Image: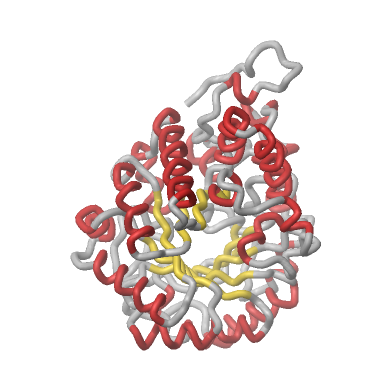
Length: 405
């Protein structure tokens, strides 16, 4: 997660994170990515059921009717363990989390245990009454997915009217004073919609938007061919930075983040080197606090059936099951070899990643993409769009050898 507004627009300084001691339990949400202890933010895909049929669903969601694998009691046992372990955030996701009737009860339980509760939703089920319930829980944040304007969004979601319902969900959250933001997954089919989404953020006064790079998993694995080229990705990052800056200069600042491609951090830094070298050095310090990809360390995932994964996109590796063993024990078990290696992945990555001058602030990017593309967990991430010249160590005369995707 790269905070474009935090880094490029100067909304956060290194001293802001240091003031809280950089411990995840003490940092406010907007500084959590700079924590020192990297206690995992846990994404719980609490159900596989969903009322929509999104083409890029990483969970391969199923019909909204039916039963879930984990009971309310089992979920509370898991949440209590996570809270005791020090996990700062419980992110309730799906499928569509609002199809579970016990979502409010479980979110309230997490908050009562001292965790911050967040939901990731398509927004269509957030009625006025549901928004009021979520506010009473003390929910920290509601992230609502949007894929562009009405025609594009409804086509992606597979259900007519999904766009209008999602925006109604945003408005219902705003009416209750809930912090709400948008989530946008970038690919060739909707990349031209980015200005439209920025306009929605501006016109509806939405305080936060996250732009997700495509990860090749779930139904998204069928969209490898829909990922942007490296040149297109660079143009998108420039567009996002330009539009974020424009909002700040217009006196309407928003929290803008990019997610799932840690090459974005060095790219912001390199642009600032040309525009504002002093700010570039401050950004480098913040990126070093961030440490890049944290799958298997600062982020973890529990599936609808209790299986534990390094993150919500990478489900072909399972480390245990919370229905059989507490998450805290699984997460700290040194005998789970892959999980243990992911906590220090910089030692194991190969290809261009191994000799990249920004390895310490990227950590080799997404292993899920590397495995999907090359069949090798430790290969370079094919979505890294930085040039050989940009990543070359200062003392290396020639760019790293090796094939490029």
